[in-house]
Image (tube, rainbow, N blue to C red; front, side, top):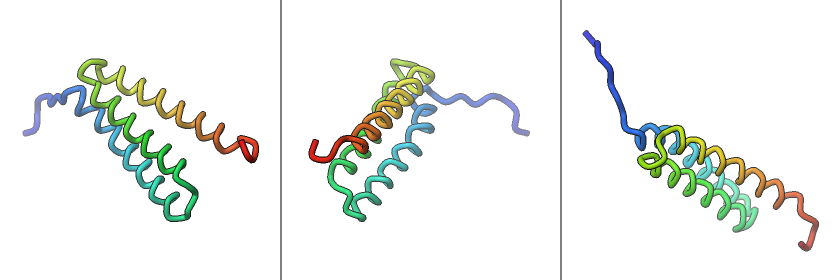
Length: 92
């Protein structure tokens, strides 16, 4: 039968979290590009996806919990940047 314990490395585990997030942000960039919302939104989404993947790749150094924490910080910073960019005065 199936008994025993399977283990995965920290980078693999972090990528299991990061890849769906990166796919979401890449999809978001494509949608925003199709509706013509500007290059800034596409760059923002692409940069966020890249930074999340880089955080996952650093799990070998940071460990899985550290990499997931960094991913969370990247997503929090992306949210703040998006809110600031969306709510800036016209012409700024």
